[in-house]
Length: 300
Image 1: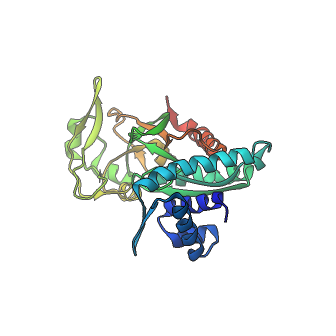
Image 2: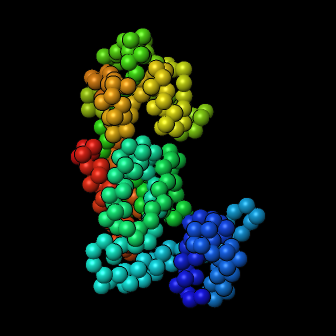
């Protein structure tokens, strides 16, 4: 086994935190994967991975080596495709993460056209409300809505999503529609918190040149975006969401926009990736395509 192949195997183990899963993704026996990593460690004279019965984790040396190894593999891919032209030049696997609503409503429906243009690409698409660790979990790029996060990462701002206040028609028939901050006392909010037990900030609105939060009552608190939307559809309260995630529901009149006078702060949208010397062409192409796909829904 050559050194480049050993690097690729090590990278896969590091990203999946499992010899078994790495072997399955590479079409190799687990024993061969383990042997390749052991031989690499022996050649380097350093322990790259902590192995337990439940999990495989990078050591401190392993994290440093992982970043350099990714760069080396990228450089080799660039050299290998230097004289290729067109869609065939892009090959390999992309690992990306984005909010579930964006993935479900906008990216996945148009993904066939991207893959048709680049038939040698494979995509692993994670969509979760959890904030993933870009480097530790081996993501090539992540679409973040809100604070882009760690300063050690590169954040390419695409724009911002407009936030709308929504309720179901059944909710409006029962409670009416709020038009002022004072009206909110007579209404319910579906509360969203990242972790159950946390405190909801309340209803956000613009007050002059700043944004404020108004505490509100409510009977339901959720911790993921799908449940947040479902609670609103069920008439359990008002939600404040990016319009990109609910436009289809507004068009179908399954939800209605309320309290248009009370505007929440737009949420910044960024593509986030590790600060490496360069990015593979396949990652550059995917990020450009995502930016183009979401452009109609973004504010400056």
